[in-house]
Length: 330
Ligand code: CUA
Image 1: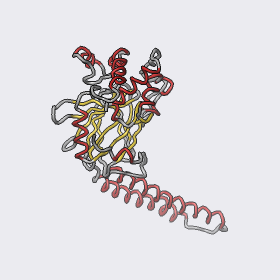
Image 2: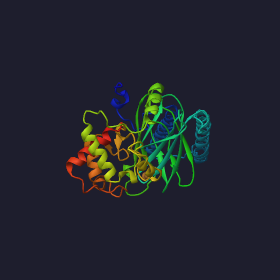
Image 3: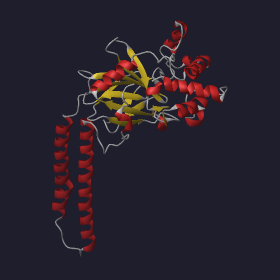
Image 4: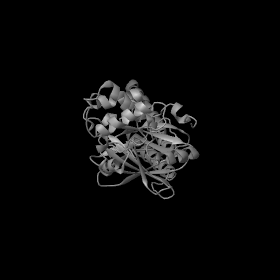
């Protein structure tokens, strides 16, 4: 057994005010300067207003006030802001895949398909709703959508980027320290827009390399597991329920016949390593046997409108076995 991942114990952050990467820090600086400056100017204007109301009418040099406060002041302030923000923006990580690790993300109603490049085999590895990245390195997220416009936003790491059907957009993420950073679809995309979240898990480079190598492996075998019988029952239920019509589990079948379906099995998230993800249903629920069983039993009760139908004909024992099997797919 490998050591438990430390990142799982770190509190999840979803806040622009707690930046965890260089780009998010620059954006936070902009926000604070604009907020602070705006607040000072607002206080100044209010103070002038109080003075104007309280004082007895005296002749003032109206022309001087109009030119000074109404023209010169905003021109000076806005010019300083323009120069400063242009200078700071130059420090933002370039939005390019050059020299960066590339991860493909396709937004769907209402979840995120995530694809990694496996350096060992050159193949794509599919996952969902969780983007794992190494700490301290730029990761270029190549974005598209397969249905409507969504928007990827991980506030602690960078600004937003729309995902547009038929187009590829990009966003570079860089995390300074290990952690779990929650993100959210930031463009209204239908009924379950609010439950279209995802998590970015930033981990040390060597840990990330090990994780990616494991992710490239086919699904865990049930052979030799202490609860092998239960897991086998769950695996049989998975096949019987035709789950693989929409979900890929690489290596689940005894023969190649089942895997042939995998070509078309892109409707739902790839489940080859579902057990290792922190959440299910696009950030909606923590991932464990209980939530997995609840989700399979009645996804519509949790996320009405989601594509996944209920497994209404499963009895409790079989459901438990199926959930145990999915949990086993680390
Ligand atoms: Cu996808 Cu909102």
